[in-house]
Image (tube, rainbow over all chains, first blue to last red; front, side):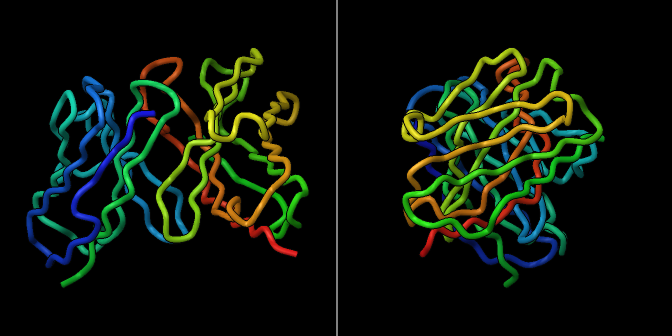
Length: 107
Length: 121
């Protein structure tokens, strides 16, 4: 199985801050990397697919980059609705595997 | 737009079978896409259980393969998961989702809200 390692596991930030979350794959996965947002009580939501492709309806303050084994999710200016947990997922080979998640909390 | 809703018992006895159904609206389960089950134990990350296609093709997580059965009901536009011989380690929030990866290299692009299953006597 491909292991996905995210960092940090949590972070505290303020509205308006720029934050970056990283995800590392245990082997090269090209750009087969997706990012999801999880909020308690709500369905997980895909933000970015194929490492950098913003899903329809997702605000442009979200961006993704990377290829191979190292990937990043950046939120350019945190908004109140962005305080949530974010996780990465590789879609290179089954079994699909996820990072452990990064919880973004209000400072 | 596609919507998914999980249903099933919230409490299952150890050693018994966990059965969940995902009802899909706004999109046909007979489409090109696969349909997936994912779970998240309390305080832990997401774990993909597997994906099923209306053709009968299935992909399973090897860690669970010996205990899983998927089915798909095109007449009711839903798909189901059976997990046998459950233990406390199977307690989790269970999600269903549309899997666009296997057909089009996309993401798990639509998810249900999840249903909490506890394994306990």
